[in-house]
Length: 314
Image (tube, rainbow, N blue to C red; front, top):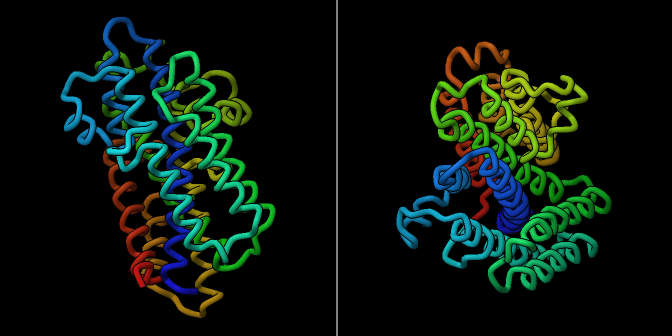
């Protein structure tokens, strides 16, 4: 496969995953703000930091952060390279570039996603319409994913799409966890309180993990078990362990297809060994923030190495 085609598939599905993750984080921000009395500026600052668009927001709007400006920046501002509308446009452009590698169903799902969201985000979203818009973003991303699973041959095309998906998803889950524990709480005194538990439950909701957590651990959302579930539980499709294993397996299929082991395969194996062969107590004892920061950097390094090894720019 041409490197340009591989790169188009990889980034097409990273962008689609990013749009869904942004919608989930906005929803989490709305819920978390409800647990606070008074100003919610810090909550929206934390959400902007999670999706790595804080600096761009500050450059445009200044340090006074309002909910409406933050949401509009993340949903539809063309100056934000990670806004939902910007990344959906980029996903469609990549899909056009690799059109011959996609089934008709996948292309139509991407195109319909772009058309629906372009219409929905033409103007600033009113408060009463926001839940519907956030649901629409998640829904349209799921339609593309369903078309991929249901119609695509399990070959290198599929593998590059999946690697892009799970690199982006792993980064998102890690950032959600880091912001929760490092930025979100007003003080260490809140740890273990009702406020802390409500916020952890909100984090579960933001990654659609509340139902799965209750099946695995029961109705009481204890922080240690939530961290275990979102970091190390291989049954949870948005956990760091699940995403890491899927990246490794899809890279393994590429290695088998092409008959070549590349540096990205070694990085993926080392990342899984270093990050995932631990228990949650050792992670928490050594520092959750430090663990997450190392994981985010490892994931970014792996993503860059995949792009280098498979010559995305050629």
